[in-house]
Length: 317
Image (tube, rainbow, N blue to C red):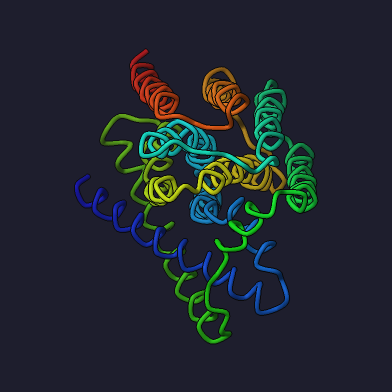
């Protein structure tokens, strides 16, 4: 088990390095081939940090560890709101200026509810997975259109996020490095996680929900705290909402579109409702003064800890 823990940590390090490299490469190449810094930044803010989770889930799905992949996908959403936003707001209150984020938060709750409905029969069918993927196309189109109406300071901040060197050779090297790092990082995590779970007496679903979801989110948590201290509340919340939508629409939807996914009963009764509950708690916090205060960050963090304790308490139930 000790060796598995070492491989798991090494895998997390490679994922963090590979994720950072592929984000920079994507931004540099997109701008080199004609995308504006604003469009590149918008897509990176919304979906760029989801790539490590996507690679881990693709690896897990490929070897038949679907419960691990499902746990990671939905667990990452709870970690995004409870842990990432909670710690970021504790570091510094998050001022949210981007108007597009409120409807995206509502969409996140709707998509989570749709997954519960899809899973009432215990399976997400291939057509339901395809519908989720189609929903991602719709979200992407809405985001690109609505974000153009944002105030100029918001647009400038988003464009600034994408600023990186655009040299072709450098960015090809970034892609190659990212591909190797993400491949081996995902492989080591997916191979080590079941061993850790067996040693702790945890199911693959719980391993995906807790150590994998929390571990893969740690680089994003650190980046969110730094961004909060710089006054970049839009970036922090954009990462959280965009990543969460990507996990449900593309990761879960993509897996189901390839082959039907059996949902554990607890997934429909506990984990997905918990994900919706975190969104419902967050929404009124942002509707008033458009600021996530330290007190509200503390509430999110306490709720996250409570969810972890509940999951652990249910192991022996």
